[in-house]
Structures are given as C-alpha cells and as structure tokens.
Length: 274
Image (cartoon, rainbow, N blue to C red; front, side):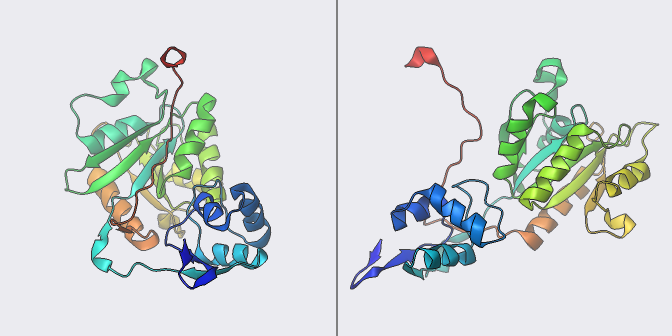
C-alpha cells in the first residue's frame, strides 16, 4: 500500500504482524524476525504476533525504508472484544473442571475426556453467569502435550495457572511459569480444590514464591484466587479478577471495520480427503 504521490513511503496500518509487514516491505518475515531479535528486547515468538510501533520503526530503520503509521480515523468502529484466557497447569489439577464451572454446563467436558484427562487443545467463547463474554483456551496438562500448551500460550491475552491446593506445585506447573515468564504473559493463579480437607492454600503460595511467583497476600503482584471448581466456590471472584487484569494490562478495543485475523491452534490431516 503506497501513499499516492509518495512512492517511497510505506503506509503501515495498526495491529500489524511480521508476516503482514514482510508483504508490505517485500521482505522475508523470517529476516524481519531476525532483525527484531537483534535490535530490540521484545519477545516475538512467530510471524503472526502483533508488533509494536517501536519494533516496526527499528526494522524499517535497519532496512532504510521510510514509513508512515496510519491510525484509524473513525473511532466509532472500535468495540471491546472479549479477553482470551488460556487455562494451564499440571495434569488433574482441575483445568477442564474450572472451564465447566464457567460454562455452567450440565454436560461436563472433563467427563468426556479419555481417562478424565484433556487430550487436545480447545477454544470456547462463553457468556458467564455474570453476563461477561470471555474466550477460554483449554490445554492438556500431561507432559506429553508440551507443544499444545505452547501454542495456547502464544495466542492468549493472559494465563490462568490452575494449581491443586492438595498437590501444590508440580512439574507442569513449573513449565507453565517458565513459559509465562519467557513470553511476558499476564498471570492469575487459581488455587483449586479448596473443598478438600487436606487443602493448604498458604503452602501453595509459599511453594509458588520459591518459583519466583509471589502472591499479593505475600507482598507480591500476582493475583491468587482460592477456588473449588467442583463446588463452584469463588468462580465469580476469579471472573472479576480476570476482567480487572484485562482492563489494566490489555488493550481490548479493536477496529471492527478492518479485516479479521484467524489463528489456527490445532489441526489434523485426513489422508482420505485428499
């Protein structure tokens, strides 16, 4: 998209990713990613992640390409979108049961899973009991599904880390913490299964502190909500914390007059279909 009369200036629309920038600049997106990694401190995981203006500026400066950022002129097209929340955590700590609690579903997703363990990644747009729209991504917790969890983390606005108040921090819990830190994703911890007699919320918080995740109750800045997904205890409180964090750290206003973007988080090939 060249500005008429200014053939050497590239017009850059809002919310552009590396793949789209490569098309505009006639450059390989992988080459642009290399420049970003070398010239900035931003963590860009793939060519479909939205770029900041600072990153685009540095790329175009390196390529000696003059650009102009074009902002949407008609703000009436901007609407608030639902936050995208990925539920992660160790196997059998209650991730899918928590999703069931938000869905208020009579048909349990958890009971439909083989061995009551999530085998695939799934996305659900939900209108909660409080009337809020939230998009949830449910990820498997078993160690064999690490790549699925990584895909879920790359497309999310925030992560809910579900931890059992009985078993506390486990192997996949630590993996999620490392992933969240590396991708700089906003985090909420849901300490689940507080309905169990042996539940120890305080012990979980201290275990998290040893992993660098310090709860607000211990003087840190990580929101930790004690819940029982099974008994639906504090689910509304967790929902309020999600929306509060989204408003604080995430820009949810989107221009609905622009072309939509689609990201595939899971697919399969049927050889019989050609």
